[in-house]
Image (cartoon, rainbow, N blue to C red; front, side, top):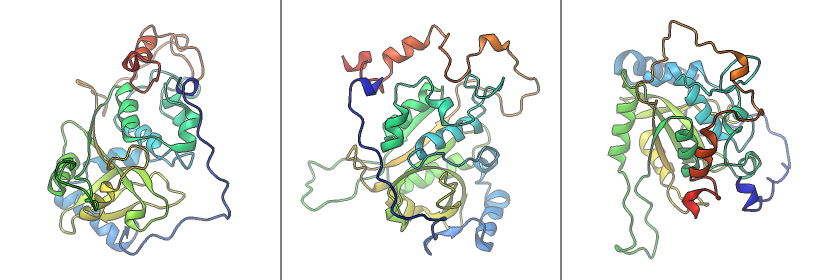
Length: 299
């Protein structure tokens, strides 16, 4: 476990005042506004670029902790893709009912995540550990004063990001999902690094629907693709790299979207959250997990 190797960072500071939601910046369009409703209707029934909306809204949840945006986003996507966690959340139900199910047998520390969130690399490892195919893409970095051509690193362009948006949100075969990790500050919001899934794309206005998992702070909203790309370019203070986006695909030959038969198992062969793991492969996964500081990758 990483807490055995690296000391925990200090906890988040106590708040100085209480807040009931934030005011959405005027540059963003509220999902529930008349314009926001029109955008969704056109994306659904004219553009055909809201395929993810149905799956994600069936499983739309709110993050249970201020720093859990990345974990909650992944949890929501796993449920949308009908992934079986193979452990029981409550009673006999195998379901990603909360972040605890995702982190129960994880090398990453729940308390560490509660204090500092996760990086884009952590998100990839968590998703792959649950069986997803995850592709991380970073935008072209912002130019800084003093940068020279030799030090410049390449990234994906705005057009390439827009192409991914169109491709994922119109895909009716592979059921992929699109997740973004962006700077809230760059969008005029409070806070900084944040993860959330994208539910739809409105072609005429060139805007995407962010299904923000911090519903206590901002309800879902539409944002311009170019503005969002700019927010993806902001540097992550932990990795000192631009933020970015993820293309998530279910495991190969995974078919669970419209199953016709229940997958029942004797309860004694399915551990409950917090129980000792009975799967013989789990220890091997931990030994080779890149997120584990004691794994073979770090030796």
